[in-house]
Image (cartoon, rainbow, N blue to C red):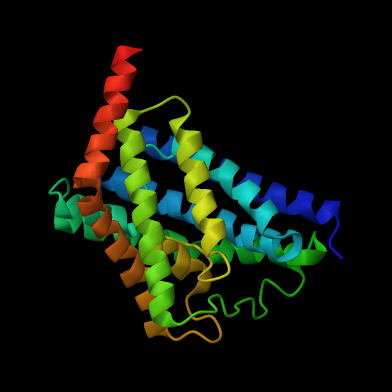
Length: 266
């Protein structure tokens, strides 16, 4: 039975990971200030590596202390990332959205996605080193053993639909909060995202991020490459692009206008 020391070790590993990423961002900002494209790609690489590195440890927490402890850590981490990532998203479909709305050239979006995948895939070597130390009993046989397991208990179409709908909801809420910019909007956005992750946890794992899902679960037992792509790439990306249209719908825009007018009165 895992104890408090094991949870402290997992927390420390997450802390070390985000601390390293924090300083790497500062160095990149200083040395790459005159190279905006390179800086953007490096920021995406660092952010995705940080996200996936922390989430590898969150899997340990979820497996041993349950989904609600996992949710608490994820909620706090999401707030931290929202504050510290600046222009980086660590999520491929945000660049696809930028291409659709003509905010970003296709080649820049492609390079950004490649940088994210590189960060997400390479970070496991770092995680293996931490797990191989076995400071916690929960890390035993994790570094080089078979840590992958079946992660969705529904059909591929249902899984893709879950990722699609939840991603769409996340993106619409984020855009609305971005427009309204209410007090504690970062906390509200993190709460909505975490709640949707918990709701989808027993179905697909609730990743809502193709790079994250690829880093953590590509090649897992019981799931083929095609099934992985359909659920975590096609499902999430369709949801993301759909959110652009949902956001423009009259009921969403009317809600934003009502809230803005209410704020103007008070």
